[in-house]
Image 1 (cartoon, rainbow, N blue to C red):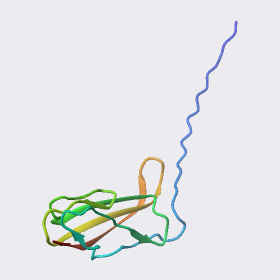
Image 2: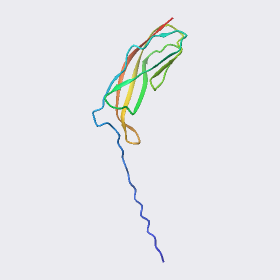
Image 3: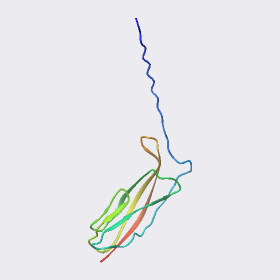
Image 4: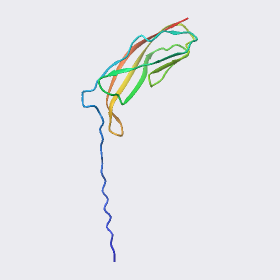
Length: 121
């Protein structure tokens, strides 16, 4: 009579990928965006500066107004065709994460910056 014994072993592996330095989100690139023109295609992508590689970034408009026809994406892209002239001020919150443990982003930092978009006739 053969008796088989089944042994199950469960391993948990945690991988943490982050830079060895003290990572900082230094800044959101600029406050004054390039000038837009009414009825002309506009595109700009907001950049972040840091002393480490950013593995995840997320942008959110938390205050202010964009011109009609202009959209803001969580990727930091501002694009569209503005339909009205004016000066538009809005605030962006950026989140940058410098590592991941395989399940979530870690070592995350946030910054906010006010932006001005001028739309000419």
